[in-house]
Length: 309
Image (cartoon, rainbow, N blue to C red; front, side, top):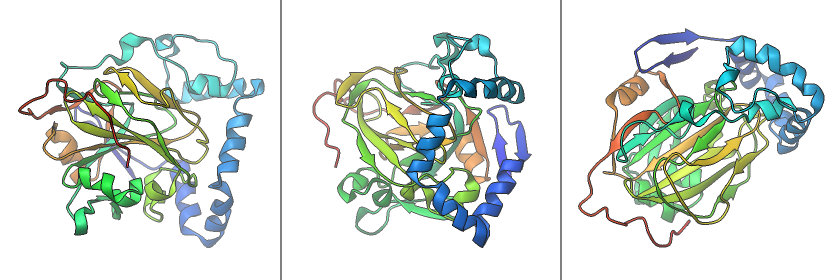
């Protein structure tokens, strides 16, 4: 069962037909055989190609009605394909960052869970999503980089098909080049996470943001089933601003992970409490999720070079 809660405390507990289908696929022998083919990168690329064809526009209307999407919020209301609609841009006023420059805001729309990164052997920090343990080293495939986040926090934003699939930077600063880790494309539905360590098997891409207020933040995009493309706008090092668009996912569910170093953020308590009680919190891009913890000297500390590994 999916357990969601919004910032006003309204709870939603549901299991859709898609959830039941995925549960069957991931728990039955026949389903797992089928998934070996479905999770291959070529299948997601083929799905993406099909949804770029003009005929796919016929899928837009039913999707909009089912998910109650207000197209008046979009820069355009006419689309050349389903994927053109799926990667639509909203008018800027609908995703403005809340608070002041010291406020930590969500980089995307999604269902948010927050996890403490607990110290392990040799600085090998661990966190647990549902009952599945992960290490930061296995997520990044770099022990030296993982040690930076030992004792910090992992923010996991799970995007479903009804979410806005563009994402932004959470602070001003200097962004590193992108690191791409190839893999497969499991669904990011929690059903799959119960059976497979999806976040260390799926294709993913990350960069570091040497930020003004949160020191060095790791921002990772995780692909998922039928998401054959992660498009980041800045492939090389660049100076960026808070709220500036970072990139977008194409069709399907997907995930964004933020790693923040210890002592650098004060998380809104409702997010921690909701996660501990098994709920994902519904958030929107630009929505407040915490604030920075004061550093003794923050002036220009984000300038300079960034090491990726």
